[in-house]
Image (cartoon, rainbow, N blue to C red; front, side, top):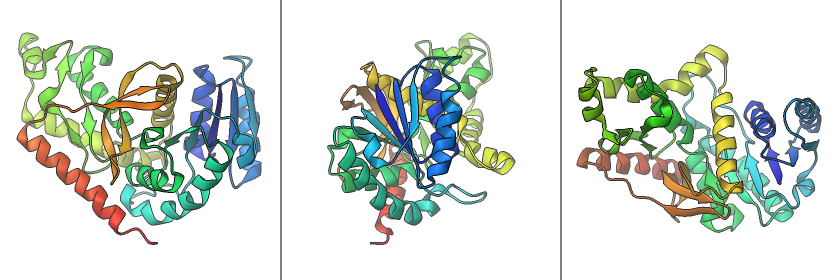
Length: 304
């Protein structure tokens, strides 16, 4: 299957590496305004194939994306230390208004997978600019945040993250919320699990974990300058769900017509098949509404 990546910075290049390692692309096309960078990344990733899975990896221009089933968009400015994701919006929205039409011209049947931050606002921009059905313009959303949440709870619960089930919803950013009221471990409600195992659990622990999930990107950026392994693997997981028509439920971002934000969504070969509504308590409903309003406010401040 042919997959394109536009933007071969750390996120885009690492996503390409992850796709080859997971045997998700028979052909991988890298596109970047810095053609030499794209060529170098294509060469480097191609050298993985004798150790992993056969794939044709090449650099090209937008026309080379023709026939791609999915195009990952990772083009844009990076988040700097101390900078919020929403502060990136105007510069990256301007880039998207140039990039997205060129992708659609070359690969009109592709599903767009947005990775650039602020991902929710830019998923909405991509949806508006592309003219594609909303089901085919999706953002990585809180897929990574949800994975971080599951890993942190699993550590507390002393159990595999595969047995931990819960969601981060709303904005991929500071206002995201954890749906604690619907959280479960191996089918047991959160408090029931910890009571049965005679392990501590409290609202203070929940608040600490939620803060750690929200702060993860800032903490990583402060220490090493950028995040890319986690989000690249999340992108590969989303691609896998689509290409294999898995009907997997992931917390990806998609427009509701007015704006994009993350809810659990069933993913298959045509993109989003259905959006699931999570049972939330009143406090969580209010927090989710606030998160959505923050994205709405950010979009309202976009320059024309």
